[in-house]
Image (cartoon, rainbow, N blue to C red; front, top):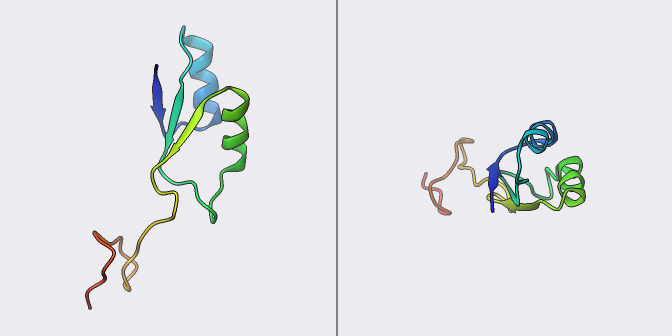
Amino acid sequence: SIGVSNYGTQKITELIQHATIPPAVNQVVEMNVAWQQQKLLEFCKVKCIHIYCILSIGILRSNLGFPCSNRESKP
């Protein structure tokens, strides 16, 4: 099967128009309670494309607002 990464509805539509095999999975960097991407989720459901989320619980950030490399923030 074929997968894509971070494709929105427009890119998936273009791909399906030209591909002989449609994608089976769309790997989405961020989809969580705060950012649900409902349009993309419904579109993929209709097209039978599974969603694989990398940051399904959100992004970890330090006190300074920079992404953390681990769960413990050091002052």
